[in-house]
Amino acid sequence: MRQAGGHEGRRRSVAPATTAGSDGIPADLMLGPGGRYAGWALWLRLYRAGTLVLITFGVAVAVAVGRAADLEAEQLDSAEDLVGAVVSPLALFAVGLILRLLLGPVVLVLVLVAASRSGYDIQPGEDRRSRRARAFDRFRLASAGRSLLWTSAVKDEAVAHLGGRGRRLAVAEVVLRILAVVGLVAIVPASVIGS
Image (cartoon, rainbow, N blue to C red; front, side, top):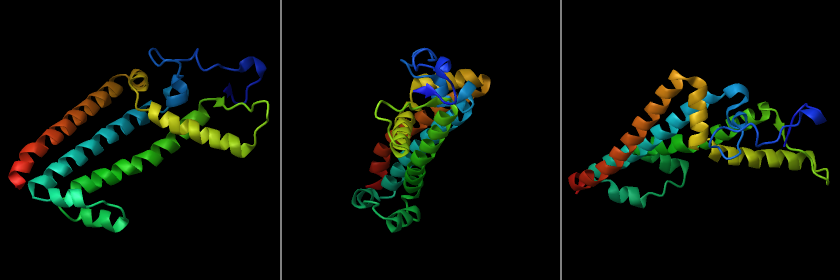
């Protein structure tokens, strides 16, 4: 990788601009230059934890009203299945699942934007690869970046960039994760109620 728009003397290697504990991943590659997208990173983590709460409590509600068999039987393979689940006791589960599925493409686009604005570019090798091949490489790197976005190193860097607001978002994420565990635990008593 090299910094786009730079000349030979301005190339950056990946390793020197790293965050503490990130094992070689530059913070500006994930959060944009100067942590520009740090708020987005934390809000996306919060959104992701919120979908887990909806999914786990959705399963607990479905089990409590006796829809456990339907939950196992429904494959939710088509849009009609999803709409049917939304207007049933599976509504929380279906909404959580839909929101969770929408998260993937959104994060992919945001990581592509952050990476393109970070100043890094993919250098053509000796074979002078085509623009299409470079575009596919960018897409693959963004897909990997989407996974890196959920790491604690990127979270810590985003919190550091945002200060107090970042700490509040991180605490809210922890609260939502605890609620997701409570929802998971609630499935057991819900199954007793539903039977």
